[in-house]
Image (cartoon, rainbow, N blue to C red; front, side, top):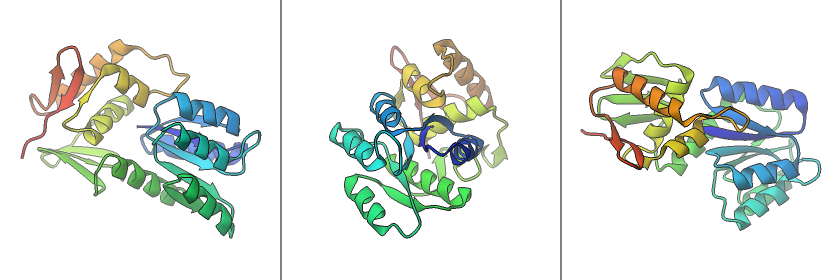
Length: 220
């Protein structure tokens, strides 16, 4: 899952990127409103962490422009302490949730997980597909109760498929959601990761839909 972090304060931005990456996501970062607007308007993010006090273009304007253009990714806004008017303006502009500075990274990650789950129509923190379970809180996957040993990229592929289980996911979609913007992307590596996952999962759990992509086929 791919997250856009929009924060102009360098130390906080670095902490946000480190924390989000450590939770199993891949992140892009923007340090001003103009870059944030462009990136959110042209890249497919699963969620955005958006500070409102940005140079060049404020966060409220960025958010309004995204929503006016039909961009529907979940947005978590960061507001200053006691700035209730910012919270109201942010929600009215189309934000899905807010967090007041200073905050604990664990709370930010919990809110991000909830936003991503709700966007995919999932209620609980644990995603289930037949014997396969994925705990979004711990970034751990199990098959019939047995823990899976996954690389970071294998986990990202599996997590995206789990969030979209039953749907056909193309290779290009996977590439867009498991790599950061500046990463050297290679579509052939997706086949490698899927092949490795198939060796660790029950047979036929990941289906290949010829000419279209992959689908996680779940059964009771």
